[in-house]
Image (cartoon, rainbow, N blue to C red; front, side, top):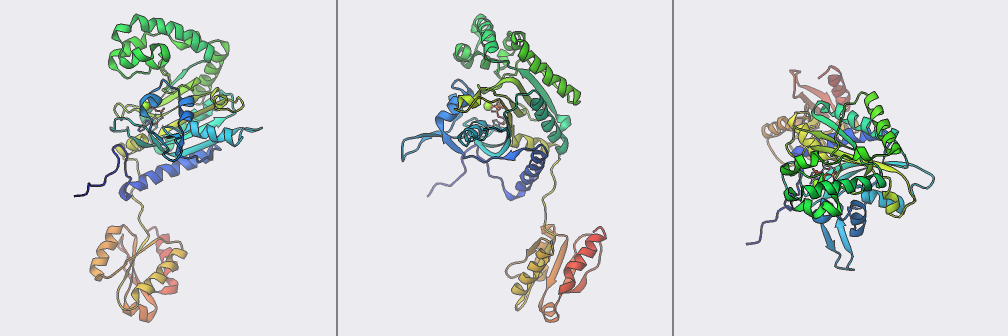
Amino acid sequence: MAQKLQAIKGMNDVLPAESHQWEYFEGVLRQLLADYGYQNIRTPIVETTPLFVRSIGEVTDIVEKEMYSFVDSLNGDSLTLRPEGTAGTLRAVVEHNLLYNATQKVWYMGPMFRHERPQKGRYRQFHQVGIEALGFAGPDVDAEIILMTADLWKRLGIDQYVRLEINSLGNKEERAAHREALIKHLEANVDILDEDGKRRMYSNPLRVLDTKNPALQEMADSAPRLYDYLGEESRAHYEGWKAMIAALGIEFVENPRLVRGLDYYNQSVFEWVTTELGAQGTVCAGGRYDGLIEQLGGKPAPGIGFGMGMERVLLLLQEKNLLPAQRSVDVYLLQQGEGAPLYAMQLAKQLRDGGYSVIQHLGEGSFKSQMKKADGSGARYAVIVGENEIASGQAVLKPLRGDVAQQTVALDALVATLGGLDGQGE
Ligand code: ATP
Ligand code: MG
């Protein structure tokens, strides 16, 4: 027997019963992004592997073990399904010279791919919406991004379930000074380090602090803090950012261990975290990456951005019952008899031109069974045409909610009659 065809583990279908939830969330996001002056950018889902290795960093979870990389059998190129959105976005910005005498505020939304162990809130194909604000040195834009994300939680009704954590990673020199002290601390604790920790303690010691291993929390908490190594400029940036967030009335906690899992970050970093989703608590994460554009071959320019895990936000919205019901059509159009399918189709077109969405009953079926479908569709009105109505140029209009009686209406009066019923607050 042929093998049953199935989706790849960790890659989910979004079925019609759920897709309206995505559409609702996407709609709120699009409005928010427009309100803050961001423009959409769409880049390929596949890029060359070196782009991700160079921007994300060799010694990171993503590059070490999570990338879907493959050889293009036609020319031998190494390609990778994008694990995040910043690298491709910046590649496009540099390639098309979008920062020539200009700044850019762009957003993207779409699937990302990481080979991880699938579990609630963690998948192999997942979706991110993200922004990049390019050419702004901050800290004002850093604060505006916090304002925008806080605004999103309010619009979605989940502001009481998320918490903002922030930190500063300083600049390269400051991180180098801190690194030395950190390696000493790791060396002193080498006996308790796990495999990742031992491997990274020299190649990427900051990342060791990012560990989720419970046995290492105490070691990480007592590690030297980057803040103590910040120079005047970095301190001023960080303090300026904090002052603006505080003045905007947005609560935050400083988390000295917040280092982010990707190499390209510097200065301001942040995460929005919820305690409502178990271990997969980070719903939005981002920060500043002032050296990345140059690293990808562009003229030096500052940048900051975030990526938001859309499934995690949707899970939270589902758990809190904050998603709208499935959208249903306005009218279910029942038809039966000689010439009725075509007659109904023309009538449906007339209703749609008048601004009403319509499901026309297709195929055969008794009026009784069609009415069951009409009820099940959630439509507000049934419009019924049979041979009598066709002969007299009329249709029966039956409100499916409330107790307004059905009436027989001339075809050219149907849209106006529906409008009248809607106007009564039906
Ligand atoms: P985590 O610590 O949960 O692995 P991360 O640091 O790897 O997250 P980022 O690379 O910062 O995540 O991606 C930004 C956001 O994308 C995360 O905060 C999360 O909401 C979401 N995300 C990341 N990986 C996944 C995944 N495998 N499945 C679903 N959402 C994800
Ligand atoms: Mg991860």
